Image (cartoon, rainbow, N blue to C red; front, side):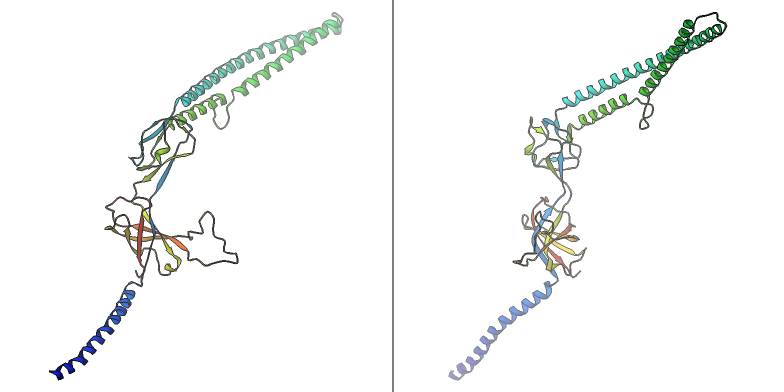
Length: 341
């Protein structure tokens, strides 16, 4: 028995030594195998869901009289969002129509004046013809000594006055024609009438813009600023619509991860908000500049205390699967790209 025990002790020592050596070897081998299996993957958790967002602003200013939507409400394209008081724009339409009517009356008056000018011209020309004959008769009598110099001068003055009346009547006719003339931009339409029509068209357009409608389908956001009675400033964003599109992922990869990255490479997308959800995607585009390059205050690296910082480049990932959960803009995701394909 003693000899058997003595022989079993060296075996146990060798077995224990083998176990002690195999564990590190297995760990090292497993690490090498894991590295070889995953060395062609690059990943980042600096990635977020992005969706198209449409900022809605009023094209006219005025007081809000009706709000038809609330925060996080879904709307379809063409749905009424809110309405601005239309009364000032209805008054503007009435003013434009009054301007058109006044211009039309003025046109009729000018046409009447032009007709009267034609009558005045004809009458003045008859006077010229009459006083021309009278002057010629007095001149003939003066040569034979049968009239006085005063009568000849009176006939000459009357002829000159008749000719002046013709000139004035022709000038009035030209002025009336000029007032009735139309420009090359709108031939046949009086400028005064055209100006009134343009004012009316603008007033009608502004009235139609008092009803602000959704330009696309999506979810209403930032609608808390809409309150009945609030004055809306023209062009100021009033709310935002997050569109119903499937969205995309903007992943910010380190510049050292871009060496083997190409368009079309497959990507795996996992969501922090939905732990069980994994989607397939692909690299759609690689940014033209780093995040710091397009920041409000770009980094100035010309100083003497410069410290090198690894830059991040935005990469757009297209989602290929149809998500079974709602895509919320700004959700954090983890993206892994297979750069071997």
